[in-house]
Image 1 (cartoon, one colour):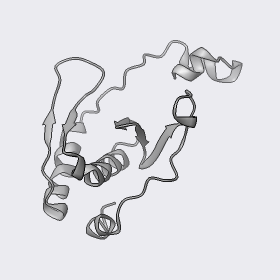
Image 2 (cartoon, helix red, strand yellow; image 1 turned 120 degrees about the vertical axis):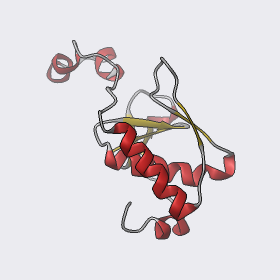
Image 3 (spheres, rainbow, N blue to C red; image 1 turned 30 degrees about the vertical axis):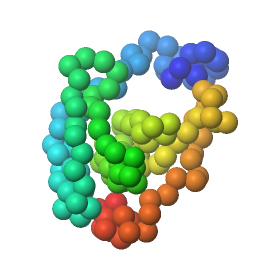
Length: 131
């Protein structure tokens, strides 16, 4: 959205010009989040701390240790597949509809698919059927 407003093109600016920048949390969002966390607890024995800020840019924050990074990527991918209309942020990655994106060249506003982000084989095997 920011890219469209900063570098307007006639065919894209009109759709974004009067739209709010916030993502609305869907009515079933809490149930989907709890369901995904339960799946990860059962299959990966993963437990993370979820923070729900009262206000701000994020609907929830996940507190995790660095060795848990692959499991958190799995959390983001599974959650984004269940809520495909939302964008999620994991470190420097953006996730939408199960696809990881990053900024082009690391700093530009263009988002490009992150082709070098993969879940480890053990996590893919544990989540077979739900991912």
